[in-house]
Image (tube, rainbow, N blue to C red):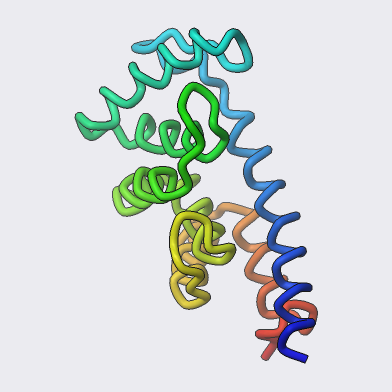
Length: 152
């Protein structure tokens, strides 16, 4: 029975994560004035964008930290690396970036770059939901439903 729940949980989380990545990848990268980014263009342009964003991320720019995380997660402009995606996302989430808090919750839920941890997932999703992030509320509702297996 636990194996069935695990498979169901894994498949559902893959769908949820895919949805979240679609949301996060739709961020208008052109708004990052300091880095003149090119989303979806030639690989060398994405690499330049990544390098520029990474410099800003290292200087403490939480928006850049989150965008670096999404680039590591997707493999755009840099080799895909789930641990570095987690690391940069965590930094931005701890600084209070709403999108990062949501994404970090999903990372903990799905074990992307980190060992799965339902308690940490709920903590970060709750933080995002509490600040008005509607997708976080939807994921929490699903987590506490009977379909997920943590239902109350």
